[in-house]
Amino acid sequence: MPELPEVEITARLIGRAVAGARVESALAPGINALRSYDPPLSALEGRQIAGVSRRGKLFLVELDNGLTVLIHLMSAGRLQLFQTRASLRDRSSRLLLRLDDGHELRLREFGTRQRAWAKLLGGGAVEQEETLADLGPEAWPDPPPLHDLLDQPRPLYALLRDQHVLAGIGRSWVDEILHAARLSPFKRGSDLEADEAERLRTATISRLDEAISHYEREIELPIPDKLPMPLTVHRRNGEPCPRCGDRLEAVFYEDYVMCYCPTCQTDGKLLKDRRLSRLLK
Ligand SMILES: [Zn+2]
Image: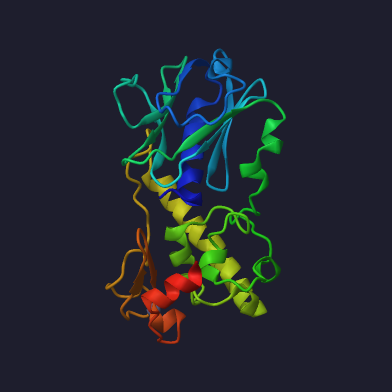
């Protein structure tokens, strides 16, 4: 599941490689992937790529004439840059931009569900795009103080993943951040003490920083199908806690899992699955 660090490294690597290249042709083989009609995809032809950037978990591919391709990977998408031309029979491809330098930028999606999407936005439309306008401040590199931002009677596990509150964190990195901050996923944002809020902010910055540095060392183009996420808590239930050595525990949901260390985060308390599922809804 690509979150802020995975989208950040992808935007950096692809942005460095394609800046200045021109789009020869644009295709959307994923029939549901393109969620805009005007301007048409053909408006990209002949345009030069000015850069690739990130906002929250979204990509913005900016063109020289003010056009922007906004891309959301959802849970199983990847943005990849290949040297070879894709066969249209590649069923994972949702959007293809063929470039005049021989590269091909592809939005691909793995699994059966088609949820990844792209929108082509004309000049000025980026500011009005709801998906972007609704995002909270960036979780990295310099989030605002969290004491006021998280002052809501909802659990940290939900608040930190709410893109309207703070943009970029999902189910993988929230486990890592809460563990690093030694805070219970259950704790309500409005119950955070000032020093806890500061600890959480520091942990957020440092865990995301470490992840991006790791990817800078490990990841190359075309961007692998499976990213080597440097997770030490998420999906490590049953393994020793990297800080205290006690056993990491998990709460299982229908299609994901939340991991934590009882000793470091919940005063030794084990969180019950059902109770937690209800509380976090
Ligand atoms: Zn621990």
